[in-house]
Amino acid sequence: MGNQLEVSVDLTNQKVQFTGVGRANPAIIIDCLPPLGDGQGYTPLELLLISLASCSGTTVLTLLRKMRKNISGLKVNAKGIRREQPPTSFQKITLEFVISSEDVQSSEVEKTIKLTEETYCPVWTMLKNNVEVIPEFCIVTQ
Image (cartoon, rainbow, N blue to C red; front, side):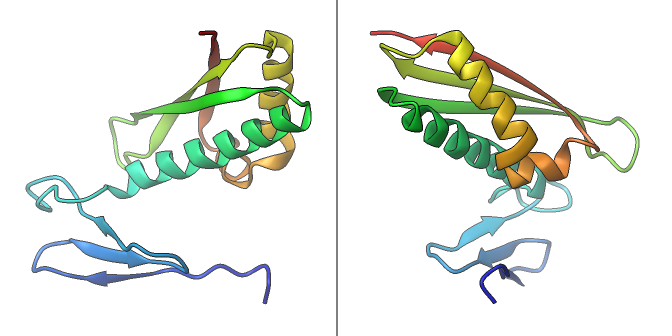
């Protein structure tokens, strides 16, 4: 089916380290911090932040390019604040979009972030009713 995605993780040591694979290579290493794991891979929550940052970044970039904006660089920094008590999931995530462009305006970036959150980024859509996601941005001109 075209709307189905599949991944698998396989235990690779005597603690909690897994190797994860999807449709593309290379495989990734997932591990928890000591003492549970050895800290030799991404934690599951780091992967969630990477997923949100890359999904929202792809959407913002695509929308700005559709506006015929010249984007020479885009970096998305994601920072998650975890709850103190179990489950220690994120209570707040900050997304900082650092956009390198000579011709993009703040109002255009605000519009694309709003569309990203409300309509186009499936990862953000899944998180937003469970976690406070705070978008920020800055425009860097050379």
